Amino acid sequence: MNKSSFGLIGLGVMGKNLSLNIAEKGHSLSVYNRTIEGEEKVVNEFLELQEEHMRINGFTSLNNFIDSLEHPRKILIMIKAGKAIDQLIDLLTPLLSEGDILIDGGNSHYQDTKRRQQFLKEKKINFIGLGISGGEEGARKGPSLMPGGDLQSYDMVAPVLESIAATDIRGSKCCSYIGPDGSGHFVKMVHNGIEYGEMQLLAEVYALLSVSRSNEEIKELFVEWNSGNLNSYLLKITADILTAKEGNRYVLDLILDKAGNKGTGSWSTKAAFDLGTANTMMASAVFARYISSFKDKRSALSKLITGSSDSDSNIHNKTIKKAYEFARIINHQQGFQLLNEASKLYKWRLNLSEISRIWTNGCIIRSELMNNCISYFSNNHDLFENSNIIETLKANEQAIKSVLINGLTNRVPLDVFSAANNYWIAMTTERLSANIIQAQRDYFGAHTYQRVDASNHNFFHTNWHKL
Ligand SMILES: NC(=O)C1=CN([C@@H]2O[C@H](COP(=O)(O)OP(=O)(O)OC[C@H]3O[C@@H](n4cnc5c(N)ncnc54)[C@H](OP(=O)(O)O)[C@@H]3O)[C@@H](O)[C@H]2O)C=CC1
Ligand SMILES: O=C(CO)[C@H](O)[C@H](O)COP(=O)(O)O
Image: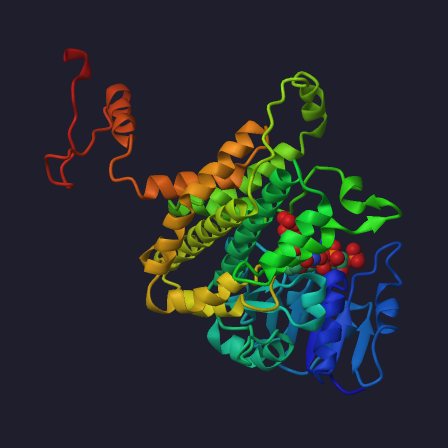
């Protein structure tokens, strides 16, 4: 049997579709899935999916899989993130040779990726942390790829990765070397943080509009928005979701209102805490999911509130559209600021314009705004340095205020809209109330403070009890 040029481990949702994508691009491929009770058929069932022109060999023995690969071996791991990756690396390392390249395409934590790179480097095995976005369809038809690690190793796998990636409007591949260490997985994590903000915004728009509009009316509005500058993949799929029916019932009405999560949103938020950036929208989106999960408690407490409903269904389509546009800009501003701070701290030299470009197709957060981010970030690192952005935010400030008032009146929680508004107001306010915080800190803990009438380098303490 001829040796395969590429290997893939893990035939779950992503692994299966990536395998078909890789084989379709003409690469010979070996695939492996662990064999546990009840899963013996995974590999054989997958092989039945391959089309005639594809060259895929399937294995249930890890040794045979490894033996089937050309040297240096190039293996994409598509299994559950976390401990499973370390366990697999432990099984693989005795079987691998110097110069082989492992690629972790899962949603692994960027610090785990860095640790694994260092561990494998001692064994002269290369390790690439590859962020992948696009879900099931993207994996099959063309995902957005965010590879991070050693550049020379990336160059060796680039022909395969670039061949399977989505293509942007200029015909370039949505795959670009991100930088060293775990930078690829960091960038994917922030992609998901932005994704959380975008998803929660749409959920909040839906919640407000559904006070007075039918699903069909909301869908019509979303379809209209999607034909203009608010175009995005998430808006499109939300429009589709709104009117999907099982029999005569909306599928949406049958879905329990408890949002799940696999961790990347909270990791991004934790990274924001570590790096000192204000990622209030992704944090609010994570907390909104957590609050939704307290279903029993919410149900019980909701019984206490019945009967006290003020409501105002008079929110105009144009108003909510402007507020949505406003909040999306803030969400992207915050997400890219997180990338910016990480880039400075870890010396990754992240290219925000290029990251925007590879996020314009194949990935879940592709949108017209992301297209515009390519040029916004070609000249600076901050959306707030762009005068058009500032003008749009100023023009939409009244709209977000009306939306928030409408949410309060209708008892609709608007976590991310509120976070967007508060961020904008605070960031455009010269003097905040942080002087109170500093005074309190100094009062109880002698933490000292800077003064408006002295240099920033000097710190002062007041003996508050003696004043
Ligand atoms: N689904 C999505 O939209 C996206 C997912 N990802 C990431 O890609 C990775 C794979 O996701 P997805 O395909 O959705 O997951 P699935 O749950 O569909 O598949 C998981 C795969 O991991 C294997 N696996 C699980 N535990 C172990 C273990 N301990 N040792 C070896 N293999 C194991 C499973 O094997 P078995 O069949 O034997 O259980 C299966 O092949 C994850 O990190 C995910 O976060 C990234 C982007 C998008
Ligand atoms: O990476 C992805 C999309 O980009 C995965 O679908 C991920 O699972 C989404 O995150 P969560 O499950 O926490 O909503």
